Length: 452
Picture 1 (cartoon, one colour):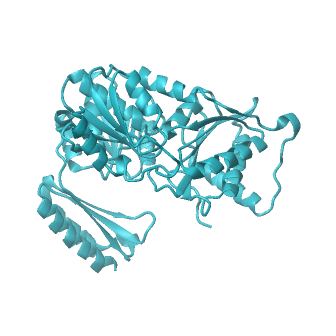
Picture 2 (picture 1 turned 45 degrees about the horizontal axis):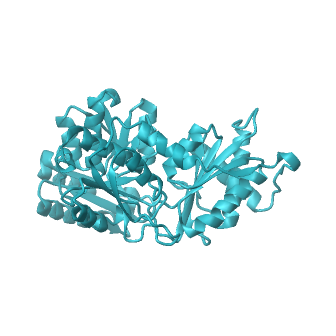
Picture 3 (picture 1 turned 135 degrees about the vertical axis):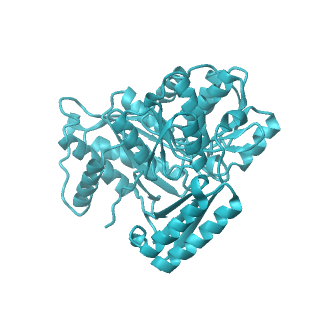
């Protein structure tokens, strides 16, 4: 059996890959593993359980709650809330475990389970591995040690969760948003209630789209993966900016007043300068992945901010931040982590801080985002090749060297084996889009020749 846990929990088609039986079994396994690790020692354990609005989240939530309670864990059911809200509440309420049911930006038929440790932090890989092992052992017949009587977990709805989370968001803002009209695209997702409420409490005039989840329309033609509606709405309403979330609101992309996209790299650049100005950017350092646009790197160098780059994936960004105490990191996709105020990417917090910078400076987002120039970027996927030889092929190394000499300091080449498919991703950046396409095409041919 392949590893159930990916980089962001367990995910798959609900009721096909991810069944009620699996959700229940993983929850029981998580309770037993954390008990073995001493997490529950000396007290009665508590878990926070939340979900996004997907229809499948209803039965999966029931399965998770049943599994935890049957293992002796008291459950606080917070209902439909963003992933970062569940992480925050896990820490704020002193819970031993948090569980979020969501497949983030994936289409509605998918769903997922993500576990948080005490404090709202992602579970360590070794604990995930142990949960999977224990789950598999009991799935094939080994009986559970089950509590009875007063030992079973109790379940109650924690209706204050949304208000607690919104109050936290507004409280950490450096300034109010009075005078700003903002369009919010909630992707018919988990932040459809709390995100507009947070922006309103912070003083903004709010227009919402994609904020009527019905269990079936999450991410459907809206949100951070489909910006056309938001771009049109910002222009139509004469708004200062627009903010788009994904289904579980752990990421944020933006649109300026002209209806132009502001991506995660640009958001990071704006926030980095704002945080340095108020002495909140520890070590004057920002963390991003190797897929960040070269224009971001050049802008940070020009502004005297150090850039630390990691492998692709927000988990690697977070690991680097926690290890060295950095305060800001993120990805081009809009997954931004502000570690002083959140343990995971938080799209609502990111959007609020971006809007706060606009309000504080009185400058349009378009002007603030111009601190970096996005260089043209071309990405080509080369399938059906031996991706394991990317780093050892002499022929490929020669082709890459020639490309890098041609591009000089105004361009960049990155060859990356896919983590899940038999293909190699060729990424080329250059000052000119035609040059980027030409170099990327030649490198794709080289990959086919050398690794095919």
